[in-house]
Every structure is written in structure tokens, then in C-alpha cells.
Length: 310
Length: 273
Image 1 (spheres, rainbow over the protein chains, first blue to last red):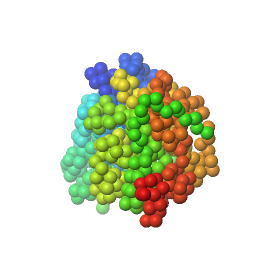
Image 2: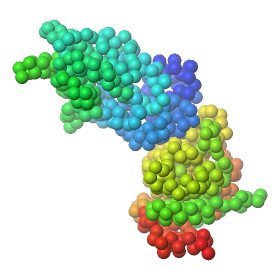
Image 3: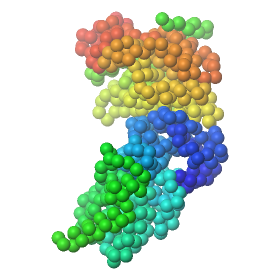
Image 4: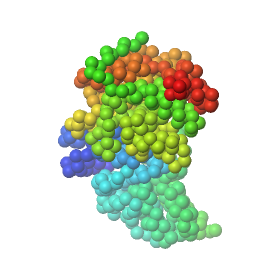
């Protein structure tokens, strides 16, 4: 998604001179196309994320649309209060770009995990929170945020290869994207884990279980109508996300079910206890968290079987 | 300790500090709230800043910006906004009232307040962004931020200072209210704020020392031609300035006044005769 993000931003910036790109000293071998195309509108803020958000607030107050780039923990958690008191409190169109959602920086160790960002950001008033599933969707999402008047958070993955079959670059704020039809169960997926969830659905299909897959990239605004329609159409619902259970789409789907009294059972697959554990690659950590395609398929099957016997 | 700048050669505009002090005392008494000492500390600084910037149209995008980074002294900001005509004087009576835009800390929803502050260390980062925007937009707008010395405990102040110095943001001035007090102690005992001028100088700023209660001197320093880099004006001030029983007293960071204290305070600043 990283290449798609930068390419799209360069395209947008050619027609929109309000766009500036700030980075907290990250983005080597990624942000250079923007820097080279718009040297005056690219600022390496240094390793100073609080100041980056504050400066973005001042720039947005003057009419700019600043994109603030770092990896998830440094984009979200170091300057969190600056985000709340700056762009949120002032209602300004600052875009915060967190690279490496989930375990993508796994081997970098736990300080670099991005597992609570979506929850933290969706607490903030009028903050659009977008977690695309693949590069083509990320490109559409970056463009779609052009018309969003308030602040926004983009949770991106750095990988450019993973593609979610059937997504075809679709994105709309406040909507979901159905990428695979099914009748027995629906799997909701948030972020870069989407291609794994489609893989899990294929494994289930081989066992005769028909699983629909729905990408939820627009976490805020929350696609209430789409979610309600889907949870009302399936007896069993599963959410999958590289995020802690609280604050992710599992919690949000549960809220929609409860708010509307929808009659379905929900299985929330998320990262339960990420810290004070051994570390490793994204694939290793995802497997340990029970979120590999095989694990998602197995846990979904168990969920369906357990429910059938009660 | 401080080196006062020369008084302006032309006839000086009326000083605002005494009227700001009067309003600070009146309104903090009426609302029965504290932060009085902090507001009295900056009365002359904020008066000079608004005289320097002149009247601003809050709806004009290319106006100058003022950021009260030490937001807890907002009553002094409301006072000066009323004195220069941006805020209707009657609005002062809504300070700390229900359904008001005048809280203890300032809210940008109030016309004349450029940024909501109150969390220390944030305001200067906004000001740096305003100054960078001015450079990018080739605007002549000026940016003034007012920070406190204890606020400089916050690391974000130095992130912003480093950026401003590196990018030589010549349109940016920071006034440092150097009253040597924190909320819960003296800076000398809590975190020493000594060598304040040297700190800013080390970050690449043009630095001036000034008597922070000599409004004309502060104004003259603000109005002097700037070098091609940001300026820090280290204003030596007295917490609670003008009210003998508040001066340099930690408790007046928080306490409201009794009736007797109010009368004495108003008498001492010359508002009651």
C-alpha cells in the first residue's frame, strides 16, 4: 500500500496545491517521489511527532491539507493528545498516515506493533478512520479523503503485493465492500489481513462451508446500514482483524448487533495478548494470534459447529 | 538581570497592562476562579503583543496569528480582546459561566482566539505551523506565541524551537513569560529554568532580554526589525504582578479571591481610589 499511497498523493498534489507531506523522519525509499516532485511541499520534521501534528494544525489553519507520515505507534500514540487538541478540537483536515498496521513490523519488536490504533483514533470526534485492505483500495481511499472536511487517519500496510481478489480498488466512506459471496457465514475483515481472510474462505469452501467475505475499510464513519443488513442476513458472523479486540471492528459489529437487536451469533477474532510474548515475523505473530488463514478457517468452522449443537 | 530595550522614539501608544489587570481581577472575582497570578504576570506582555499586531479581523485568513500557549492565563487574553474591540465588553461577564465560550482556557470558537490551548507545550507547535504556512504562502503575516517558563518543561517546546530555528522562521516571535514559578513550586526547586536566553540562542533563535512589565519596552522589542530567524523575547516577570500579597506566591496559581483580598488588590493596582 505504501507505493500506492505515495503515487496517489503525488497525483492529487498536482491538482491540489493545499496538499503538503510531513514526515517524522520515516519513509526512506518510499516518499522520495513526492519529495522530488514537490520539494517545497515536503517537510521532514525530524524525529518529533508531537511537533509534526502541531505544525500540521497550524498549516491546516492556514488552508493546507497536511499528510503526516510515520509508522503506526509514532503517528498515533506519541502525539495522541496533540491530535485530539489540534486537528480534532479545531476541526481541521489533517491526515495522519500510520504505516504498518497490525504485526507488519513484527521483527522490529513490540514497540513497533500497530494493534490499538484504530480503536484509539475512532474515539475522536469527526475523525475518519480508514484501514484499506490492499494497495488499489488504499489509492481509492486516499483520493476519497480529499472531500472529507475533518481530520482523518489512514492505517496502511507497507506491502505492495497483497491483493484482495474481488475488491478491485473499491472504497467508499461509510460503506463496506463485499468481495466474496457466501451463505453460511460472513467474515468481516479490517485492514491488510483481507487477503488472508479470503484465503480462509477458500479453505472453508473446500470443506463445503460457504463463507462470504466483506471488507470493512471505513471504520469511521461506521457503515451502520451495510453492517446491519449483513448481520441480519446471516445467522453467524465473524470479524477478523490484526488489532486488539477492544476498539476494532469486532467491537463495532457487536455494537451494531446490540443497537438493533439483530439475531445472529458473533465470533470476534483479534489479537488478544500481544505483549510480553516472543516476537517474530508478521506471519509468525499472526499465526500465534490465531489469525492465519488456516486458523481463521478452523476457528470459524468450530464456531459454526458449536453453535449447531446448542 | 534583564536588559530593557530602549523606549520608542515616537510617541508611545497607550499601555494596556493596567486595564488588563483590572479586568483580570474583576472577572476572576466575579467568577470566583483562580489562575490570577499567571494572568497578572502576562498583562503587560499581552498588551504589548496586541498593540504590536494591531486590530485583526478574525474572518481574514491572512491575518496575523497570536497563540496563548500558556492557555491558563486566558483571562488576560479575553481582557485584551475586549480592550482592542474584538470581543464585546459584555462578553467578559460570561467568563466561566454556563453556555459560554470563555472558559479558563481559550477556545478558538471565540472570535479573536486563533487556537484552543490549555495543554502546555502545544501552542508553540501551532505557532510554528502558522509561521511555516506564512512562508509557504509568501504572506507577510506575523505570528506571536506566548509561553511560560515552566511550560518549557515540556519537550514539545523544544521540538518546536528546534524546527523554528532550523527553518529560520523569521515571521515568528515567542514571548517567554519568565516568572520563575510553576504550579506547584518555584522553577529553581522543580526544574531549573535558568539560562533561558542561552537555551533559545542555542536553538538558533535571535534572543532579547526585556523587563516584562515595561510594556513600552516589550513593544519596542517586538517592533524592532527582525533578523532572518525567529525571535525569543525573554521577559523577566513577577508572578501576580501588581498585587503585593500575590506576588511570587505559589498559591495564587489556583486560589480565588475573598472580598477583602479583592478590595485590596483593586486598590493596589489603582483601580479603586
